[in-house]
Length: 447
Image (tube, rainbow, N blue to C red):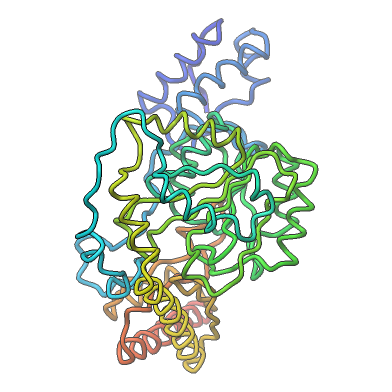
């Protein structure tokens, strides 16, 4: 590509490239010349070209992909969780909890009256902090030194934690396949995601070691009910990951234990007792409802102090009314019994659907969490198209993949709110969709 790039200083070169992007001469995904080639072409020092690219990276105009070079940033939106808008199809890709299993807060709300909270008071309500300290410390190696704060949900916590530790183009290790919100957070922050493969025991050791060798400054891991796979860290895997991190104590490790009270798996942490930068995040949205935008974060002292600076009381604190409502619910025996019943319901429904799929010739196994991660013998997009013709809207695995990869052969299905007839219908339709795609592929091969 013959580009009219000009300039002698870093600012002039950056402005020239920005103008090419704005005029459409450079489009999202287009590669910029290598630094050395650009410097030679313009007759400037290599460091000048490096500084020009750094300015564009910090402005979010370009992204650096290591050996993949520097490319124009793609502003395309990332897929989001939740119901599809304006669809007449039965949506089985929502990732939502069952509304019938979310506790009714009416009784707790009736007793919420109390003194008002004024500017300058602690970000975390003292009563909630006392309860949360016990909730967060179990299974956490550096529990004795932890500091607590609250944010407006887990996504808010992860975004703020990354923002206080990273700058644009810093590398962050993310699970692959990855939670949609984490992909979105990395993109809007301008961070360079480094994919770490996930297997049945969670984040892989080889993947984490490779990411650390690439200089990641943060690691985001889901210890239980990884979304979309449903994998949870085993005790053995967690110990191996802690060992891999032993020589990198200042890499920020963020554990997003989003399923916490609903999980059927024990919590195993990859945060070692001597790790220096860490945070464990637990939100209440899965068991108290997505509109209960509250998460508790336990972290080391320095990370907590930096996080507190991004939660200035009087501007962005989490409502103390919401904090008190959360405390009233999680300390109510009837509510905790309902949460335990919901956990059993999700697990039972997912197990039952996996058995239905297996009976229809699609071997499946339920992990932990709200969803099923179903392996297919053919491309998931083709199966999804067939399901749409049968009245279903499903999510393909392609949406959750970090890097460039062949078409996914996975579906993520949210089926826990289907009754027996609906579940049987969907299982049969998935099998029929797979057969239809296989028939089409065979016909194309014969032709």
